[in-house]
Image 1 (cartoon, one colour):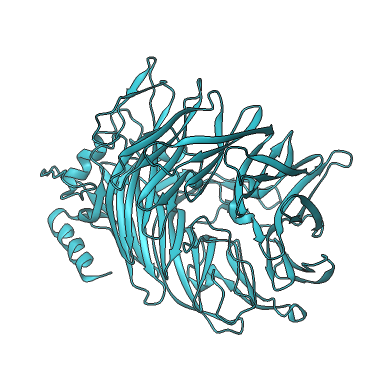
Image 2 (cartoon, helix red, strand yellow):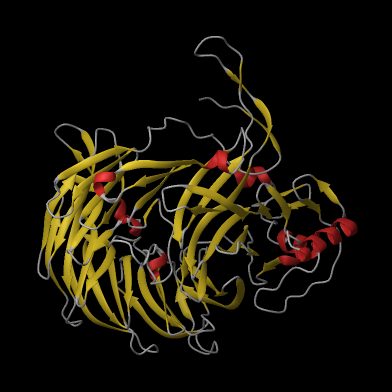
Amino acid sequence: MNGRRDSAIIAILIAFGLLLSGGFIVLSDLQDQDTTGLLPTFRTNAQLQDFVHQSQGNDIWQDYFTEAMSGNAAGADSVRHSTTNIQVEGVDEADSVKTDGAFLYIASGASISIVKAYPADELANATVIDIIEVLGLGEGYSAWIQGIYLDDGRMVAVVSVSGPYLPYNSTGDDAYGIYAPAIWRMPEERTVIAVFSLDGNGGASLVGTVGTSGYGVTSRMSDGVVYLVTQHFLWTYDSVVSLPKEWQGNESDAIPVTDVHYDPGCKDPASFLNIMALDVASMESNLTSILTGYASNIYVSSEAMYLTFQQWNGGAADTVFNDSRGTNTLDAVAVSSDTTTTTIYKIGLDGLHVEARSRGVVPGYLINQFSMDEDNGLLRVATTFSWDNQRNAVYVLDEGLAIIGALEDLAPGERIFSCRFSGDTLYLVTFRQVDPLFVIDLSDPSAPKVQGELKVPGYSSYLHPIADGLLVGIGMENSSLKVSLFDVSDPSLPTELDNLVIPGWSYSEALWDHKAVTYDPVTGSLIIPVSSWDQSTYNCTSGAYVFTITDTAIELKGKVQPGPGEYVMRAQFIGDWLYTISDTTVYVNSLLDLSEHGRLVYKERDYGYLPMLMAEGEVAAIGAVR
């Protein structure tokens, strides 16, 4: 690692001793605490020990076993093509399929297939990257590619790595032989950022890798810098705390305790939240680690990352939440005992520099990243709180994350299903029996207000603005997929112009993953993967459904149906060609009339199996079967 970090590690070794392999540090009975600053760092091992043990009186985190069981931008001269559907302009999100207008880059399991896609007549396999082989992981490791990015001639893969696993021992000669329990070192889990150089002809070569402990929570890329967030579960074994590691290639060092931040107000530290920043061009990186609770939803703008942590408020009696509005002088909010509060950290992002800037708390919980939006330094948040007496609220927070405006008691008895911020407007859908679409005015941050409301059957779990005054909703009605077109040009009088329901039992990955949505504003084409179940034949099918959206109507143009047993992952377009990507095959159709042009098998179906237990730690006895 860098010199500063190596020096810190050496100092820790001299002062306290390194006890176990893998970076386990014995925590001595030292003192000296410093709780100044927003997210201060630990000054000694004893301080970290005291902080952790304060939360272990309830026996939740006594040892490892308790924890384990509980739980794209186009090139300047490229043809017009689709990009990943993202939340914030200029902040890319990793996805399983990307295109640069010439090639398709398809991440599936532990491999990346690069397919020559354009011109469509030249459809061909170019390169297959075996990520386990390329990373030099060797036998006994498993890997799963969470997503990829494209940036200026380079491809970035975010990879979850676990291992090593030891093979199981069969005690019989027949096909039903018993697999004996194996004594083995439980595998570590880490997340790796692998950067590849693209040669423009479908070839790729590894530039380098960095990584950090834990499973990948999310990632973003902005201005050539990848920001990776991982969560490394906190556990202790014989008074030893496992600190996160930073990886360069397949070499690692534990993070010095003096580099670990914490929140003095966190009563239940449960994990290390690691934020790694990597400059894709220079391969320089920086790692920040925070000892805190479980990360929930994360929102990233071009200048900041907002981390959220939910806290359940239990007890028989109602509790009072003293919110952080202004200078904490406004009225407290009485909330039900079964509700939550959400702590929000604002982390400033400036290239490789990552810095904690502010902390705030709002009542309720957030459904996903679309529940947050940053505008001119203000954070707008939509929450639902209570289970027995549900109600919803919208809060506006200043740069210090103090609440400066609130709209509360919205849609009592219902909960939020989808949010979409657009400038000074929030489109909000709640649901219990019907689908109220609220249009909320945020132009005055101190006084958000409802401008209009529309009630229609079903609900929308994803909202997508397609033009000024037009909004598409993707949701469900009576167990069937529903696509709605809303006219919100008059905020006081939103209307549903048209809707289309897929008959029978049907659903789409777009209901919970916005990156499954492809929209072409030039042709008005909306493409989403749809799975449906035929009640007469009991067959489940998957396909790419293509809708045409006009100013007044929705029309199902057609669908691209892959072969039996195939599952549609994504759909992309390049020029006038539609590329439907299943788990094994790329299908090419005309985007104009959906006529079939060609197909290409890029990967054989993998019938592998997943290990029964994927976690990190020491040694345990475990039995398993295939």
